[in-house]
Length: 442
Length: 86
Image (cartoon, rainbow over all chains, first blue to last red; front, side):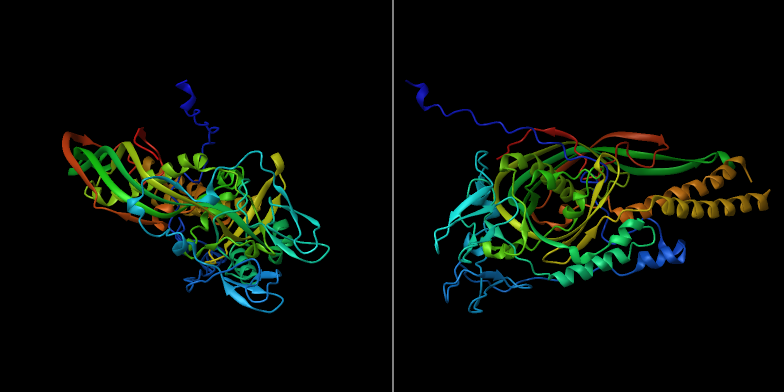
């Protein structure tokens, strides 16, 4: 029986939906703070709103962190919470405070990226077992009662009989328990202030109903699932570039035209590089960045996080917050990773083709992935949402605050008639000037 | 004033209106924003190597850029030559 040792064919994952759509992520985003029109040319109310300050992001380089368990190491109580504004856990019984271990040092995630070979997957990033249920039952060790935790949205529960607190710490196959968690640093009050500041910059043309119902105090702290990927890759790109050799004009007056001569070059570029902590959404819903259908690009924009400071998983960090469960495996995310690695490669070679002053047309690209390392992580986000009614179920607008750096981004629904009126007013004003110039010169 | 110049000036109004609408819409809705991973990820690259070979000359073109210029459009994929992936 020679066939007995042949491994079964690998399971082919379902095709990944293309991440396309206007705006993102196919377009390279503009530099932060840039605006396509010079604000000085706009009327004063619009200019004032545009030039109001943005919420400031803070630097969050945390100190070395230490160990944490679900039981208080001092008194053994289970009523443990995350201490707001820090990476500390605090025992609500004896007020003891302690810190979780950083996964960066614990698992050696920061080192040896250039030596990576093959695909290394951390235990919390393993493939999701489709049969694993979201609802999990625990036997309370205090009183023996059955307690159920819905891992779709929460990772802790309290026994309603004896008040014992449970956390889902075991890495179950349903994808709910990641390798690491990055605790919230930005407190709720701070997040509320940032959202308010963000919206105050966008009031003039905002939807009336949005302004009336705006209550940033309803912001929710949520841990969203991500895959943090290190990669060791090489890339080749080939194409053609042009260098201008001569520029001349022919004709005179209205018939004057500029002509160019140029040398055409065939270009090949090769670059070896490593990426550290590339962050990918590992939930199907959050990974869909089609701006026609949703505003998930807002949550994507507040990346990156200081993932170096992530601590070992401990469900107590999630107490009081909600969470979303991972539903994508490494295999599903591989095309997205390769797409981003190719984009990085193209950005890396750009400096080497600066002399081609008439531009470069890349025609072919190749990516060799030598090694990758995948770690699943819960990252903290303050999320304010507003549902704008409309056709096809309307649109859910998010304003998101990075729970570590405070970076804020949002989608504010617009009052179309006001925006059109402003555009037509400016257009009419310009047209008036144009007509005046034509009238004066004829 | 020539007819051509007059026509261009008359387009100033509609162009200004569209420009203001588009710029303000994006300021509010931020549909053009996404994570700039090309700039914001820690990348350690070895020096770029490669070759440049002159293959042709263009004479008397009115184009200001090479056709299909995509040097800044990192995210627009071009023909993929299959490499290793792990």
